[in-house]
Amino acid sequence: MLHDVGEHLPLAKKFLNKSEAHASDDSATEDSKITLSALWPEPKWQSMHYEGYDTDVIVKLYCIYHGLNKKPHSASGIRWAGESITVNMWQDAYADAVRWIRAACENTYDLHTLKHSKAAFDEAFQDASKQNTYRTYAAGKKTRKSFYHPFHPQGPIAQLEKLLPHLDFPLSINPKRIKLFPIKVRYKNPERAVYKLCKVNQKSVSWTEGDDQSDYINEFETYDAAVEALLAHHGEEFAVNVVDERQAVVNPKKSLDGIQGVVDDYEDVEPTRLMSDYGFRGVQFGNYLSQHERQSFVNNCFDSLRILSDLLNIPNHWIGGRKLGLAFGARGHGGASAHYELDLHIINLTRFNGAGCIAHELFHSFDARMCQQWTGHDGLLSALICKGVTLNVAPQHQERYQAFEQLVRACTDTRSDYVKNAQSLSGQKHGKSYWSAPEELCARAFEAYVQDNLLLFGERQQWLAYRALEQDYPTNGKHPYPIGIERKKLNQLLDESLSTIFHQC
Image 1 (cartoon, helix red, strand yellow):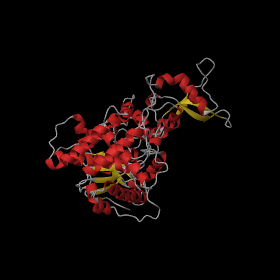
Image 2 (cartoon, rainbow, N blue to C red):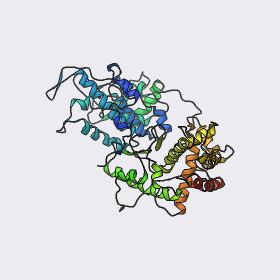
Image 3 (cartoon, rainbow, N blue to C red):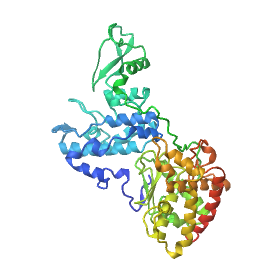
Image 4 (cartoon, one colour):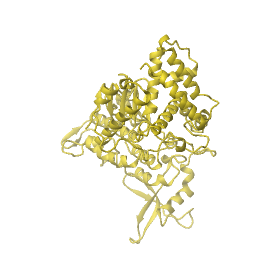
């Protein structure tokens, strides 16, 4: 298994159960703060929908989250496998389990991965003989006589997992208000099963028999018919107000279908070579990456950086500059495919969507490095230029700064269709300012320039830049990349500007 190399890159998700956790988690070390909401604030389910998560994934994550106990078990004196479990032991195990589950859920984008999370969790919390311990059940629900596995919710949560895909969740449904669930029951004639709307607790169900005098007869031939009755007769009880004018947000999301990387017989690269050859200060892997995934990230990044170095005519070592950290599937958040952490100077590529984003995130790192080296400011130079911040540029960097400023002005020209499309994306209800931010406009223009050059030179490697072409998105006034004559002009300007900006690297 490949492991982290080089400098320690702080604040990765796998460190959440250690002293290096975020400040919000540090406060959870106090007994009064060891709660689910303190360790893992409830995700914003609607936001996840607008970010492009599949509904089935959101439903599963919702049920995992609400299947956890809200605080540690307080039962003392329980003996488990000959060991007497104290309150403090429950608290420590609860905090470790919640943090583990949180990291697993925040690093997933599909049901396939979630299905494997239980086995990985069991492996992490079982004893040496592969037997479940009290730690395995510390975060799950509990009745007077039973402990439940946190990945095997019972009662109402188990029913929600089946029901929510049939409802308008997460947009107009509050699952916490749902009191009745379609349950398959056999009674009277054991050969005939029907569905009834039932109240459900952890271990039992109950229902009210319908008759001709009630609003409806509580007996249905199919699950779907029971759901229709639930909506018709009880829908107002769990509906939430939704703006009638709500429209689907156009959120151009990269699909990695068909992306090409290194060939099958590509010689495996050691992670240390990303440091020795390209100047990264450290390389970090998420706990949930398999050996195959780790090697694929290393091989494809190494190959992509070789191409970028040739394209920009820059020394290999300058790319990392001995200050940039590189993480794979270790620090993702929300629905982002990848991100650059300005304060820590780290690029993270997420496990499932990081491929194809290398050029974009490297531009952000270049943007930050030039800002610090040329002006002494910490920040993104493109953003400071657009904000009109007065910058004292050292004389030896004046020519390069002017070339960069010209590029930024062209990428952020409000008269261009490129900027108008970005503003249209950002201006949608539930839209994000991300699209029209100066630094993002510049990074996407660079990304498009790189992919155009990959095609021009016949490179098959697409991890560097992917789905940044004109034909990859509809021309609906919300195209995220430069198109048409504007793309050609920006590419030409990038050719000229980058040769000036990087000529002293």
